[in-house]
Amino acid sequence: MDDITIQFEGFSPPEFVHSYFTDLLEQIREEAPTWANIRASVHRVGEEFRGVIKITSHAGEFFSTASSRKLNELGRKLTQRIRRQLDRWKSTRFSHETVRKPLPESQS
Image (cartoon, rainbow, N blue to C red; front, side, top):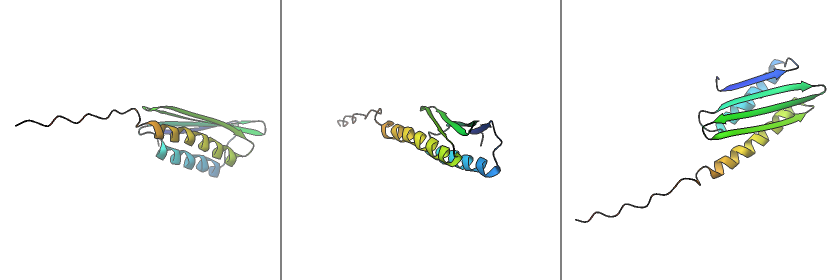
């Protein structure tokens, strides 16, 4: 799991919270470009949690931020936003390829 890193700051999450975010990032990895690195952080600021997901890959960078008072809602917001970007990338990634002209038939 070297390609996925998650940091928690301002609080120590119970194991189920760590597992929840790890599972979300594993799902995102399945949708991300091949060989992508995924970095996430969750910060507690007062009564609120703020999160960031950043994907770095050969296809470009994807970035999402969100905040919420509830960790599960924060995870949902972060993944929805990053998935929108990944969906946009998937819908345009083949539009830049050129179609080769057919080779002329050989004359015998």
